Figure 1 (cartoon, rainbow, N blue to C red):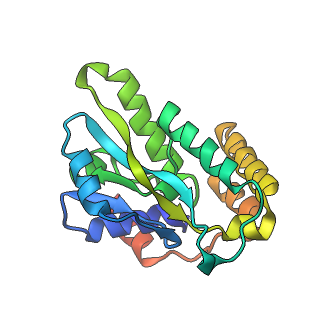
Figure 2: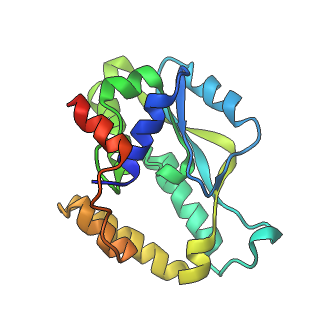
Figure 3: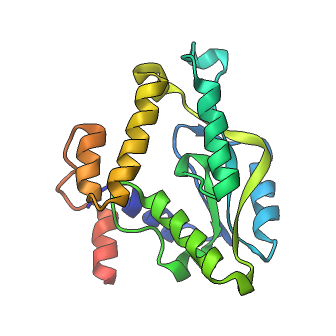
Length: 200
């Protein structure tokens, strides 16, 4: 259905570069991000890369709730120890590999989780090809704190973990969308979905 997967694929279709970088609209890129991505992806073994995770705590965004540092720390443990970044860490991949893999799955949520899982599985199964997902060190990509400001750290952490568990247990992305946003996905077919549908 409608949602992020088709939108991201539409953006990739319109791009013409050697590498693709997928940025959430509320995420701030670190300085010299483009050269860092290029340097990582030109290393033969790196299939995909992402930045470390950070949350914007500047004065411009206002006060952040207690526990934000723990959110950053645990997210970076997950990323570095298990090579499991999420979309708000700015995923980058060569356009050739992205097209070979078929792009993002055609779903409204968890599209980043699925693509990263595919890369991780390939890395484990094809060790002789030395494929890997690399986390770029140094300054992180900064995510907006608004979810934690609105709902507080414990609720956001529990909700995210619970939805990942439901998804891994087979809950459909459309149902996840309703639980997460409290609304139905748009029934109308968007322009990029029509384009993708016609390609099938």
